[in-house]
Length: 374
Image (tube, rainbow, N blue to C red):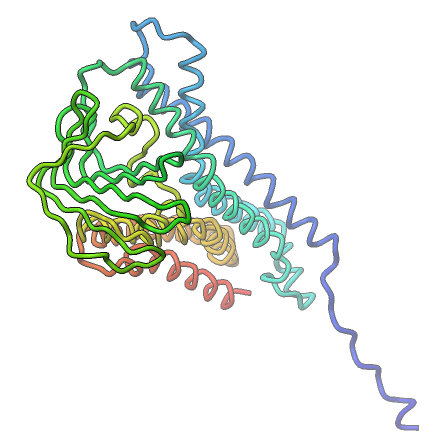
């Protein structure tokens, strides 16, 4: 009899697919609008900043349009995090104003679980940032720089920077701490590979200059390596000056090379693995850039977490304050991230701490804030 009068155990609550679709649409729509709005603003800003450099120089309109479009992929990387934050905050404010958040909580549903589409979309944006950084942005930046140099800069203008160059046919790597298309370059490293991929020899020189189809290396040494081994075949051979006839010329190296700041994660890893940086400072810089490139895409997920967690507060005034707090946290994230990067590049912080700790710490902060508010 007692069994007949006992109440059945409540069924396990499951999220309705309609709720998930509603959250996905409520987040994706303002996100798309924010990305488009920021893209237009950055495009207008680029036009105002650079259009004067193209005017009065008989630059075709197609070249000018191509230049400005090539500048936009780099902008996407910077606007995506703030766009995810604004979209998440806007979604929560609309739901809070219509008491939908209260209804979900009254039904015993977790806000973090209901917002699963938000986390998925934000993760996809993180992946998009990573792909843009690795594939699209380097090529578009090189194209923009090439167009700007070809159409706006004088032939006598020099551009000195640290660059890396790989000649696949000759199986040779070139690295310059301070590259000069004309005149002397500083900190030159040339690494020659065998057909099996092992290192044959490495030439290091304090200065390098190309004159009359000849490379002139000054104050350096040559290290010869054993076959299929990282061991030296003998002591380094030092020289005051060495002449080499390589087919690579400064013009080709400049046109196929980029600044350290524009290298992809894969290229940074390959340069670090080769371990032929001219100075410890350059190696530290590359390590900081590597860790920052690997973790910065998480900023979009950080923005979504802050936008949802800080805006889940009762009352219209509370939501506005929560939105302001979320924006302030993201601004703080950018400031600390740039500050630690500067400290890392100057040797005040270890490379991993400088490049990755801020991104990981703020991601953890967002997860904890969301867990407390769900």
